[in-house]
Length: 393
Image (cartoon, rainbow, N blue to C red; front, side, top):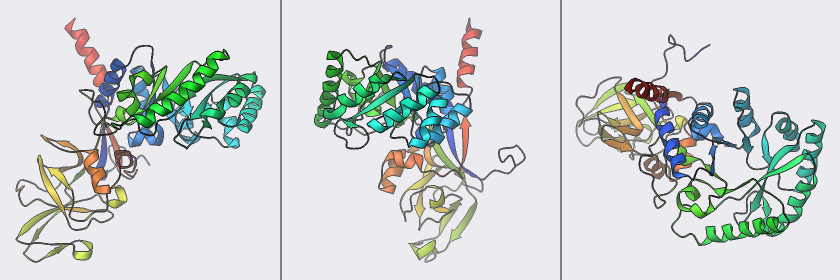
């Protein structure tokens, strides 16, 4: 069944993705980068919940070189949808994944000798010379080969005729903080490896270290390519990193008022009776809850209705939150409420939601559940602007 058809009654709660803002963010990021520096758009986890295919198509139109992903399934979804650009699979691959990567021209990180040998044999069997990237662990202690043990592995890669050392990369642990001491140490370690490669006349086409924080604050580390993730979606990775004017959040979360209740003094609200009405109150029930990814809080946060903040009261349920609309008399059934995003001059940011969740903005974006319909808007922004330009001429 086509649940997105015009005849099917869709749930009155959704995430809204402003593709016009996404496009503008990409243009601002691309403009901020030197022309020689490539942009790898990170679209793992459904582009941080924004919809990987829509993001990928717009990113390619705006000059992205390729895409960073985490799982084979993510990469295959883009390939099957016709995305032919380079797809870099971050992290490690199981041996069973390698034939798929070779067959579908996926670029992998190879960080240990067995994977190098296995990938080389598969590539040779397909008659291909496969580009690979090597991840240099410079202090984050996650994926990769240690910086002081990397040369033998790189030399092994170069000895395999069916492999091409296309990239060398590392990942910064704290690029978006004021104190750059550790990130500078990491960059120094990475440069040790690069100098050793130069001495051995081993070419590397793509040297890349920067995530969003590094792109913003470490221009000396841009090298050949930057890997930008959360900034594409209009969210700055920290409160202290550099700002680019004009970057705006792409995702909003919305719902419609599904019920209105009138409370008398002393009446309670929700599971656990966590709120007691001090006076006569008027409350709205919004059909969204912790089952959709809303933080499981009590008497914290709120929603924007008619441009005003309606405070959340009581404990939220799996499918419902209650907000106080006593001071918003114009609020009525099926009015739109903004759970995260802007309405009028007011805004509930992803960082506000992260505080409620006692977590980080990345967690908030990626944890809105798929049962919240994803609705894309302003997808024709580029075509409209181009038409206006032609008309002006």
